[in-house]
Image 1: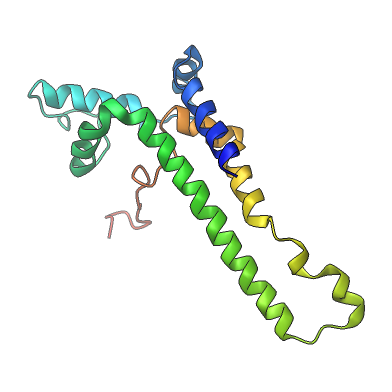
Image 2: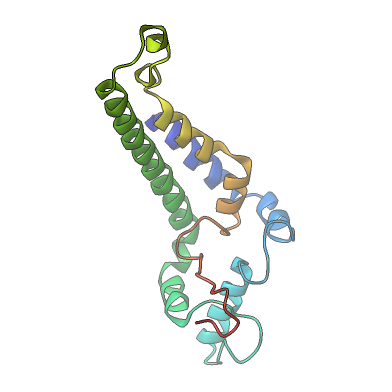
Length: 165
């Protein structure tokens, strides 16, 4: 398991240092004005110059998050890779717990003998497979390299109500 996690982190790290990253950041299918890391960089540059980053329509981040991004800015590649690795491990543990609970429920029920061959207990690696799907999904890799998407800090709740209530 750790070999695959290390390979996924290495893959993300290598891609974040190539020209592919710049090309991917400019793709509208991946990065929008609200989720673009370039906007965060511009906001931090404006803030460092003593200008209000919220005066125009460049920065869409919350002020507290902009402060936090200022702290982790020089290590942002590593930070986003670590968030992906942590997310993958949490996915694995969640799926393993759900699988364990389903096996216990299955064992507590009296199953007919013909269905004994398809027991859930024969699928113990579902958490591992879920983690691998997350780590090696091309879209997940692209979002991590361009610093867009699955990072929990970049997701915001948007209210369906027009006034934001």
